[in-house]
Image (cartoon, rainbow, N blue to C red; front, side, top):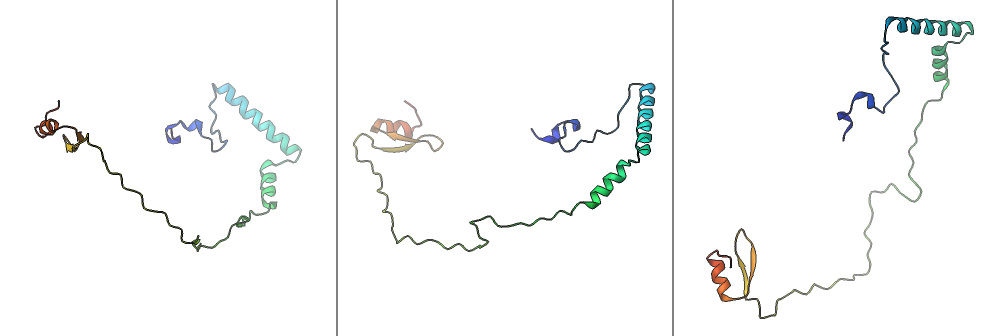
Amino acid sequence: MTMHLHHPSLSLSGKKKGRHKFRNAEEARKARELDASWKELQKKWEIDADAKRRSRAMKAEPLTYKLTTPVGRTNTHNIPSRDTGGNHSTARVEKVYTGTKVLGIATMHKSNAVPVFAAEEAVEISRMRRG
């Protein structure tokens, strides 16, 4: 099953939760007060989370990617064929029926190949009868 058929809550591509819906106005008010008190506490101790995050991101080294060829491989696009000395295999022997039971092969219906064992069968097949 593909991901486009799933509900967006099943997404594995991040941790963003979006807006939180509260049960009632009282819980929403308490959450706002708690958030405000947390921010005041951060200001009291001179911790600005956004500024700290920004400064940390600016101090980080930029990502550099250097693609290298694995050991034992080359970048050549021309790979010469290997000459093994001219050994050739022999032609396959054709299979030929040498028995006396089957008289031939007839086409009965919709290109269905049927072996013919007797002259009577050949006549029945030519009349499109199955016996």
